[in-house]
Amino acid sequence: MAQADGNGRRAVFDIGSNSVRFVAYDGPPRAPMPIYNEKWPISLGQMVRDHGAIDEPSMAHLLAGVSRFVKLAGYMEISDIKAVATAAIREARNGDEFIAGAARLGLTIEQLDGAQEAQAAGYGVLCNYGDVDGYVADLGGGSLEIARITSGKVTPLASLPLGTAKLLGRDEDGWRAAATAIRDALAKHKQQGLIRAGRNLYMVGGTWRAAAHLHQHMTQYPIRILSHYEIAPGTLLQLQAGCEDEELKASLQTVSAQRSQLMPVAARMLGVLNDILEPSRFISSALGIREGLLFGQLSSEERADDPLLSGARFRGSRMGRRNFNGDRLFHWMQGLFAGYDEGDDRRLRHAACLLADCAWNIHPDYRSAHALQTGIEGNWLGVDGAGRALIARALWSAYGDSKNDRALLSKLADRRALRRADKWGLAIRLAMRIDGGTGGILERSTIAIHGDELLLTLPPDTPGDTIIHRLEKLASGTGLTARLK
Image (cartoon, rainbow, N blue to C red; front, side, top):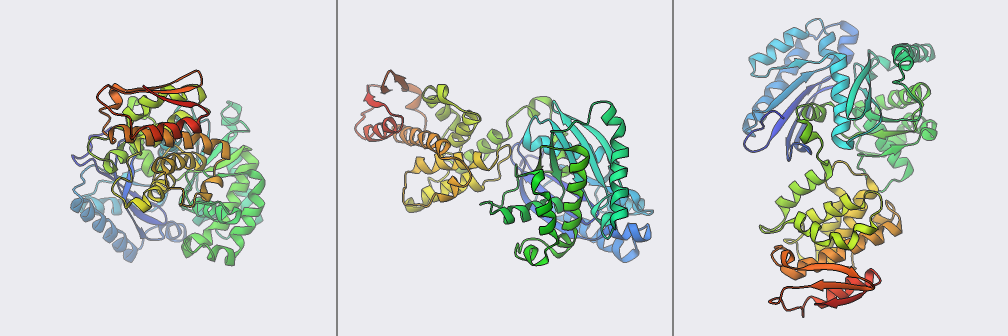
């Protein structure tokens, strides 16, 4: 990756069809964490569609936004900046005038063509989902980009002038023409075997995110986190009806008026892509071209890192005490669970260990609630709602307060999986009692299953009087008998 600033921060300027967006990031390269996000609204897509150029007042307003964000980056001591412009600027007759004006303000802007935009959107999906096999569709204000993702590679397939601003107000003939344009653009790729039914379609773009939030609202999904959120093709008609319902959209209270008027277009486009690509499911991507631009700068070794563990390790080191080491904690308990892991258990348990010291400085009566919220609400990549619930349940159990409400978790993950996470939490709780979270005594102790016994072996200079109760609790939870040696 391009060398980040000494403080680890980097920023992206995204000049799109509906706004200029400035996002500053911190955190590890593999799991960029937004620390500041601001939008400068301006309807460039519609203006360029109607007039072919950016008028003088809009140009001044656009450059004023750039000027503000350049100054903000300076105040934040960020010099590692990536700035790009997409469809609206590349289609405007005077787009070069804007690029030159931004350069005078100290910002170098790269104009992305359609293929580069599609690749950046695909990289954004890979940043969050790792190795996937499917399609990415990025619906912006000025254009629609479609790419194929497989084996960690992104192959741009099509870039079409079918953004939300250009689709708004189309009649049935207009929609048939849009569908025909997409089919024609993908025809050669279908002949080459790149278009196959039954793959996931990852949705990138703010208007699709708004539609996904509405779908969550309609289905009473218990959290508002869009990462890994799935929409079944069979619910598209229901979603399209919801996107036409002004009263229902108003009840969200989190969607701007500009996004609200575009949501019917976004839902209709999902229907078009469903007919053409026949995906098994639509998956909302909380990350897009901004994160994709950062991902594209990573080395192959950095790309191979697990984004969930990279992010949890970074946040755990910030929230934990000086001597806490979550990796050491994870390896210490490996013998208890290695033979019982199911699906993603190992990495979710590892993430819980990395975050295990997240509530040490919270009032004792609220530690378990804080730990639960950390697992559910953290800005984690590479994990779905069920995985968040298991991390949260493990952290909740580690802090041992049964008075806090945990009903939310059962709406995201099944009970059997939550019971497994309880055992992870009890093991964390035991480890914390053994050496206060420092890891010093853990390095000289072992825990293992021998027959029907859970055997904890401590060094001779460590009395076990205050430890035995937590060992017995863990043994009871695993159906074993506790033995302290």
